[in-house]
Image 1: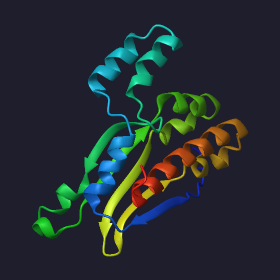
Image 2 (image 1 turned 60 degrees about the vertical axis):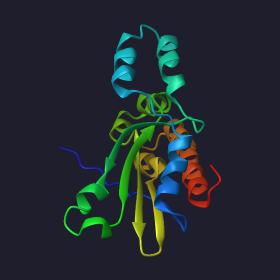
Image 3 (image 1 turned 180 degrees about the vertical axis):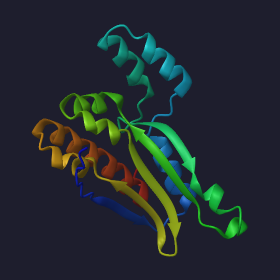
Length: 167
């Protein structure tokens, strides 16, 4: 049995804009493929070139796509009602970026695609993300770390732009 200690860095930015506006900006910048069709077409791809042809149309302007959305606020609102803060967890990424990391560090598959949390608090809408480079740092693989850092830059640029209304 092996246990690896991982120290995670969390990036967070706060927006004074309305929750729905911030979320709409992220939605506009991230691809939203039909995931059932995406899985089917991914399985049917015979070559890497075929796979790229399946993936590319599903990517948004950021080079990222949404894989899943969890409306945590829906659960939170069941007891106190509409007064509960909104909170959405997005699972997003790019399978081609994931491939580059997992080829070098198989454990990267535990962290990709990535999670973004968008939640309302008293001081505004928080957009948070755990940096991929921090997850991969203990593995000491320079190539995977470079890919992870590039992914972090993409996600952090998206969150920053969505927070200030520049997506």
